[in-house]
Image (cartoon, rainbow, N blue to C red; front, side):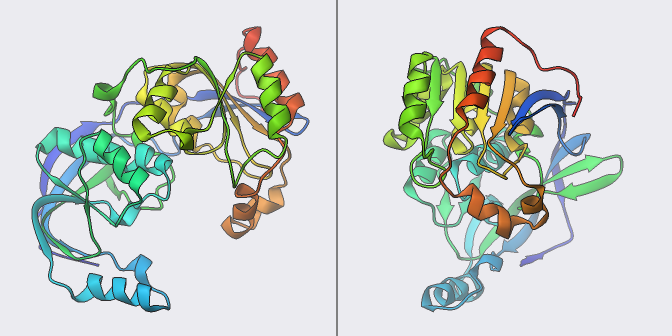
Length: 338
């Protein structure tokens, strides 16, 4: 819910750089596809606006139980916090570090670069999320309460059309905000060949065999959750050849200038081009592996996709060996064929 005056002030209009298609080699079961992945819409400019408003967030607070009722009551009836200029991110709140790095932090840095001292409003955050924001000098105001002041918002334009940015935007916002991370690029500290594995959901069921296989190929196994946020960033900035189970770890590659090779291992029946669109322009060779794929899962939507995405699965070592051998021989992706 937003109560505001009709007056808007434009603080900048920033050109959106064109994006060349990113070649992606996709191995799906026994199929081999060469893709050209790019942003789904080519916008011409991004504009930062402000207007005096009282900003509330209630959509995610509906539901039974005393906890949900308490949050709803705080949001609807408590006295607003007055903050001056503020960016309210509660409509695109992250559920993992990837969404922070690829969607929300870029907007925060772009707004701060334009206006300097502003407040950033979030819902209450888990400690790792807060630690990541603090790494970029973003001290979040975490609240369910209404916030009053000069509310900032972003618009993307194509021709004369304007598009607001919301939680349903279908491409990483990082690909539209320019190189907002240029002050945070570093050489990092750690091994250059890294396999980022997972525990729990999406953990490889053949993990022991997989780790032996990759160790023999010169890769170090990394579980990011074993390290604090600054060390996670440093480890990924140092990596030059990266194999990773699909997830938040790949977003750290936005914090470096280039990565020679990325091999992203997707769960069965799950495909998304989020990372090729977002970071593919910084990667020399991008490969995605899917052990098996049933289009019927995709057609049935998120309720069907999510159980597969969150289920441990076996990594196809034949696929992985092929991807590594192609990388070792310098075999480049072909033009679009599939």
